[in-house]
Amino acid sequence: MIDADFQRLLALLPSLSPLQLAALDAALRPQIGASVASLSTVPAATIATGAEPAKPTACPSIDVIEATFQAAPQCPHCSSTAIKKWGSANGLRRYRCKGCKVTFNALTGTPLAQLHKRELWGAHGQALIDGISLRKVAKRIGVDLTTSFRWRHRFLRAPQALKAQKLEGTVEADETCFLYSQKGSRDLDRPARKRGGKASKRGLSAEQVPVLIARDRNKATTDQVLRDRSEAAITEVLGPIVSSDAILVSDGAHAYRAFADKAKILHVELTVSKGEYTWGIYHIQNVNAYTSRLKGWMRKFNGVATKNLGTYLGWHRIDDREGHTLTASRMLVAAMG
Image (cartoon, rainbow, N blue to C red; front, side, top):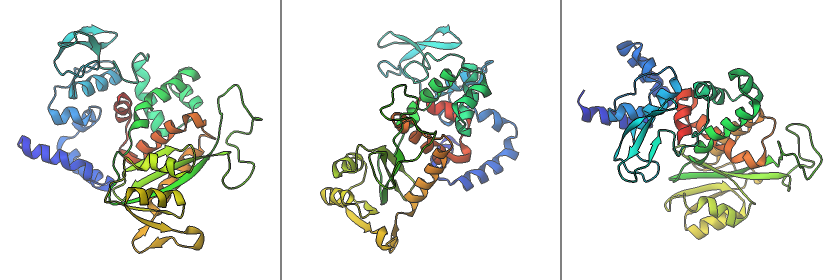
């Protein structure tokens, strides 16, 4: 296959459904056999650019890190691509920027910089995919509980920020709530409650933290912890990302109507309390289904500290977006940002 055809094939990959990707994988494996397994640890960008893979080392995590950097090498300090090799240290290649003259390695400027025990990072990435508790992670890979906690939040810092920057076409929006939690805090401003816990009263209250979820029909998704349910809070999230020619579909909350009027976009309002679940082809079933999956996924953690809620929302987005195609190597690449 000539390079132009190969590049066109690569360009089509993001548009394939999970079922189509599985079919493609099944078709390719008989052709290239065991080599697929070795390629699975190398970022797709490395293959696409034709970069020479790093020589395998005794640490698979380092192989992934080096290959990811080589796919798009640039200085983390000034973004220059004019760099050269500058020896090695602590198991990683070092580079020197020809522009700013500063040396660095593939992890410099990433959330994983300065973390140790890289040989365990692959196992930690798999633990994130499995969604197990911090204590189980610590026991599984043989690290301290505080290390398990620190690694989780470092690994998820970049995925937390990776959300849809533009929602187009039919955009569904709705809010869900999570119980306000000070889990892990030494100084509580209320009596401690059982893990997970329940609000003292049903419905909306100061005990609940609202989260806005918006999703278009192409499955582009964004979410945000809200300070309140006001028009200003809704507009702050949706204003920069909802396309001017989009159609916003929501429940009957005034904030959505006010945002749509101000943004001059079409708005379909469904009053669920009156049994209005659809209006022609318009509904909020996609965003509600996503919310249901999110709630079920969060339940296994027995409550999440409100200060860390955004991190867990980002974790679920990558888990929901990539599904069964998510691997430990891919999780490591995502963690690098």
